[in-house]
Image (cartoon, rainbow over the protein chains, first blue to last red):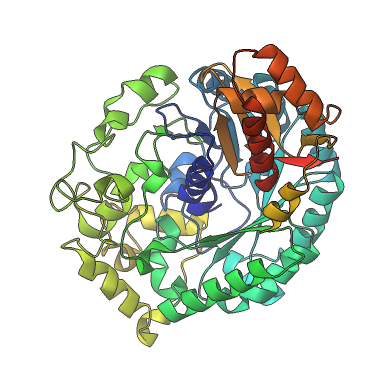
Length: 408
Length: 98
């Protein structure tokens, strides 16, 4: 699961679709996109996972099937249409079949976002019968070596089998490949692999640095030259005649001059309900200080979206400070990402340091330099697993987290 | 480029259907038709929704033009708008020729 796969890239696609002459819009304050982060348990241990580093706190208090169904019903009334069922690995729950069937009855366009681990013929048939609309499968590389290394599991052959299973059940093949230093040199081969698997869509999602990927940033971040070369190869492949595969290349914000319009705006389009029932405007929001997020166990979902102090806090632009407040471009990116800004600067209301106009921009420049430093590169990767999550909660990995605010 | 080549061939006898893995539905909360597909959605405003509603894999482009003219007799010169909508939808791969 990646920040990109249901984050801003999805919105970017939606926003691009607006410019089509039929005045299509997706930017209204309805939670059109509901992400059900249904469990934080996961058989994979990906170094680039955006999930909270303290996820171990949320593995014993998951919502029940009934609570999820109630959430789906209430969100649908608020206007939610696109449903992502994600995690962790959602297939670790045995009630996905029930949830999928309910989503279909309610009229959602539903998407299971999975590593493929746990997908069987029996389960995929039940999803098909229940009306699941598509499955997004994560792939990691063309080589078994890199796949197994970055996920810290032996899952390479399994992923290829699952891809074939998805195709044989008539599902569109939607692949998500998170891009980092270890696979960015294989862009052409990754695209060829996707084509060979019969992919209809492939998302090349450059790692964004939240959660586990942030503490592994020096181990994951490619160079600017590598990113440019990867984009060039992608464009070349796209221009090649005869391919019907839709390719989305999500540009990493660290190498841009302006920040991303994170989540298409706070509380504008996206609503996330986490494994333990927290209702969030974005994946990482719980890192922010002095915020009390609603929870579906205690709070009505309509109130959570429309009126809760947490959702209203960064809606619009009245919260902005300089240099954003009087910036001519502020509506383009709404000052970037509140979570990234807080994690890197300690001030959630500052300009996103990705912006070259931010007084904190040197932090990003330093991060890019650090990722080239052989000594820092050589630090061990902290894989996303329960043991490391416990260590982070207890402060044992402080040397890797102290640089960032509010981690865990 | 591809879409331009395809659309220049559009004939009144052509029949279109919604592209695979796309869904067209009325959204009560938004009071509009939408097209849903993997990783995205498009909200359709009135006229576009009326055209797409009639794309069923059976009716020809000509049938749909005639139906819309009959349904909206006061609308002027809607034929070009309708053909434009077909071209756009085909170019975006929301619909495909059958």
